Length: 368
Ligand code: F6P
Image 1 (cartoon, rainbow, N blue to C red):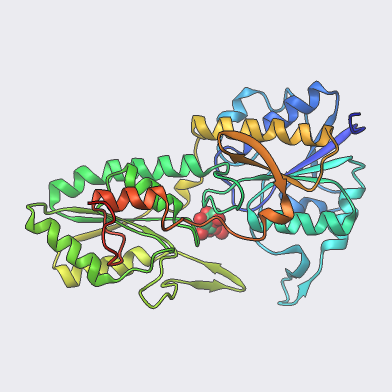
Image 2: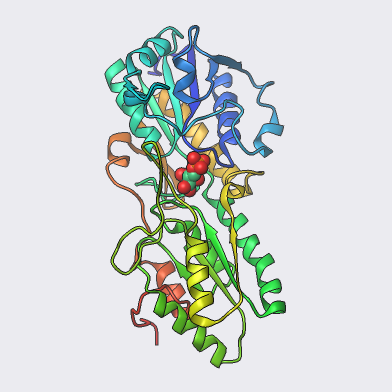
């Protein structure tokens, strides 16, 4: 028997990415076909702190096919401040969870669909458990670090943007005999750097999962030069670790760790050690904005429809996931236990080593 539903709520939480609107559209279209009312909560859980809660009604008309093509999220989002210890202007922290739970209950919804990364899904799961309301999670993150799903909304578009950047850097690098460094996002996961680096023909790819030694990188550039190549493309993930295993660049803004800037540091080292002209491009939030790729639209749409089916079946506290070319679902509690990092023995690492791409370590190439 179908779970009795009249009204559901959706929110987007954490850093935005391409494909969020496509997921919202799919949820609204499928839910409306079941005659359910759908409301969107504005600005993630922040919308539930206001009184009355900040919401907007979502209908098939408001999510017409144009929003599927748009980056960002029409609901707004935030990646600042854990509501269980929210930083207040006076420097103190406040637990806002009871206010958020009360805000959600005041909406009289039968279930909540939360679209977020690992941090957001963890928070929503805790709120739902404490507040006793049914929740479904949809994974989104350009970092692709949510566990138990092979991919998440936004990752494919970010890879396409980083690959296009390499396509644009290669001709200018070759024309000027320069070393071009591209710094990409990803936090502690090197998926964007590794995937775009291979697709974009990088000579060196540095990821957090493989501590790098600058001398290995310099030696690789020397080898390229000896073989007659006077330019190089280097992709660096924002949270790479040095040979001692320490994260190289961290800046703290309050309790929030902000990454970025490693490209300049390594660029300066390479310029000095190789005597090479070096230029650095920090791709930054360009990776998060813009129209979603076809694959992200498809993934978001399939995830959105499956999330509604789970509610219909009364199966809650589940996260939709992509595994073996299928949409499946897993317990949110299991998904947030670990992170999906690059498998250093996996197919893409073997591919990179097989191509002779330097990964910053001195590991021997496994393919002969
Ligand atoms: O988690 C997604 C992400 O884009 C990371 O890759 C990046 O480090 C971070 O968010 C940037 O966050 P902000 O939008 O706060 O600068």
